[in-house]
Image (cartoon, rainbow, N blue to C red; front, side, top):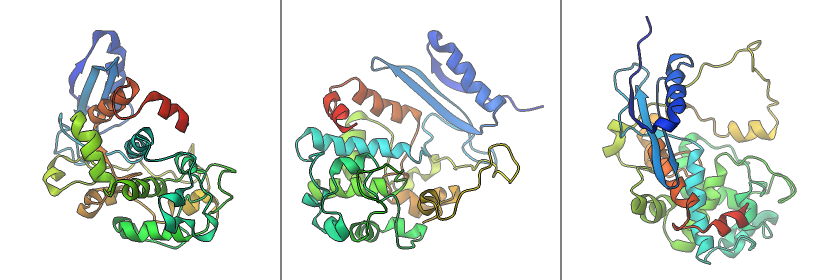
Length: 293
């Protein structure tokens, strides 16, 4: 008989169907551990967690468990950059090279800040072959981006900048403020909001970081299986470097500031930040958010 997962936390009665769906995620869909939170008009109406924080099911998923949330980190990085837009320190329609002169190399002198936001700069990945460990060396990866040629004419199309997006925005934040993205985020966003979200953290948090457990790999013939052209932009982006869930368990990954994919938090911390922005009055005006779209 399958183990019954106990769901902890609270859920407003009006949203009981959400709690039921969360529980079914364990019962039917095979989830191991997770958290879910939602706010309404700035107030938490759901804050749930349950399951386990490791594949051996030896560590319960607790109230303060955090996990690598991959691209949700981009939300936090974008908020940091938009705060500078709101303060008049960063202009969406200015060339990136105005703030980062080295970026003008190889025909990139006219790329606009808003094209970084919109994944249309043509710098979706690195031209030079890099290793995962290179992502821990900020200067190396941003200097490579500054030196390389765009993969397409900037502004003519959009392509997901899976990892580079964070370094591009993060370097703009660093050039303007003199602070790393992780430091700026802690001082200006997560600290003031008491949000348990980290872009780079010390070993004191390792004991509450959940493992990233990979989903089963699809084989040819399985429903949903798709063959990808190895020369496609998608392959070039996601194979250089090739990231695996195992990387997220290393001390090096957790300590590094990888602002498009390396953030650790939980549903509560993400909802706390998102709610503060959505309700207005914190850091970024709604008009600025709309302008950046």
